[in-house]
Image 1 (spheres, rainbow, N blue to C red):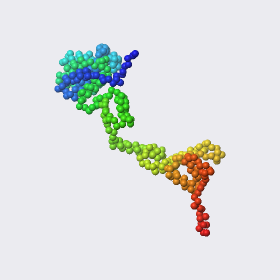
Image 2: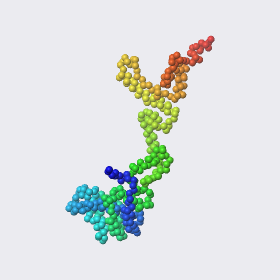
Image 3: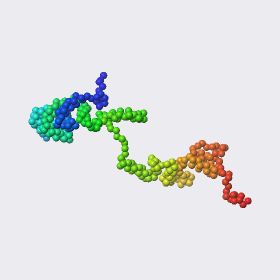
Image 4: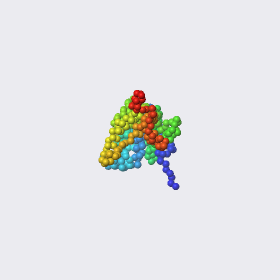
Length: 371
């Protein structure tokens, strides 16, 4: 049975870097008096980087130096193939060899750094390390620091990139103990943190739980700055512009800011009358023209039924139906058909047209008055 290997990025077991960090911290103590404790990192971080590169290049260093001696103009990309990395160092010095000439240590150290490829030099220059070389040299700290780092094992074969990342984080944490928590911390796996957070606090079932921030996370309250609030006003105006372009009431595209129960009904009727009707008439005429012959046009016509869009509220419809039945131009079945209800049989008077018996025509009323 093959051994199951766990990816270090998903391994929950803690990575122990105490030995390496404690050793580096002991080197930092050599800077006491010359540097304040919060400035130790100006020396230690660049030296850790330099030593890490040196340990990585140790196996191919001699081949790179010999190639450089043969051809100082040898292309950088080709030299990277010789070194086996995306960087190299053409200097004959190592940190261990630098301490053999303490009288010229500062100059030789600079020569050693200049032997690195351009990408590494850019990193070291960005840390402004040249000033620290002068400062340590003037205060008799350079020799002890270089010697101590030459004894530090940061070989990638024994310390992989994940462990090296933890070493850097622990160092920065110690050097910045007075800084706000999380300022220098980067979570090893943001995806796993996000998944853990969603499981613990996501959804209604986890409502009202007390959230504990970890992995250097910060709580930031949500607020809207005045300039952003003005942006929201612009967005509201854009909704009205869209409604105006397409000739639809604002409530039909979700803008209910000025909507009421009464004006929505009237706006919907106006939408049918002023926006839909002109197009419906055009379509009716166009379809009649292309679909019917002249004889068929006398018998058939096309009409879009928009009665459903014109229906008012229940009370208004019932009042209108009552007026129609009482005045004889609607029967009960006419009304029930409009309301999608079952029809009343003829024997029960479903199709009878009725009128108010108290109403007579004007001429009959005049004759009754004369008599």
